[in-house]
Length: 206
Image 1: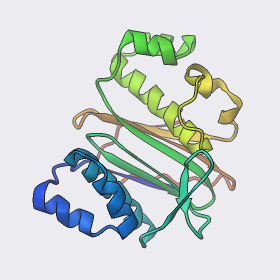
Image 2: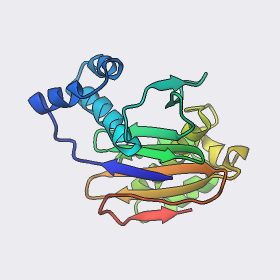
Image 3: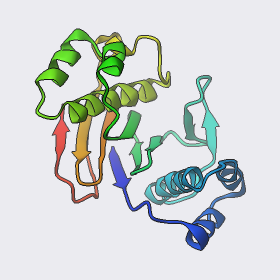
């Protein structure tokens, strides 16, 4: 399994138009549905990052819950984006989910709604509560993207559920750029190789 994160999000105007023109027709149509430039940029960059990692421009097929996969291939992938970064993970031997989120979303009321008592304790004792909250949130999202479920009603306890069987995480935070991420992988051969091309070193393997 390998993953990449890019956080040069300053593409706009003619440069963004040129980027969108590189997309296959179906993905270009999806990108142009976004009203604002930011949405078009994230949609285009996420797809082109995946294409770069695969070595070709893939067609997508989707599960009943909407999780995309590469048509005609057993390679699993997942992409995520926020205003500050684009993330993509590819796995040849198992399932994978990735989530990247901007820092600064922490609110005690939100944490009470989506975190378990143990997670609330961890957030409360952390040196940086916002970072701790965001890392836990990305772990939950990455796990649910791995399973193909997406956000569910039991967000509090997803990291304590049977979904965790055989799953490993790699998590990190880029404080300077203002985002955190998690990758969840269930590799049937249990031979995990994590690769991140960022210079950031704030990674935790769990």
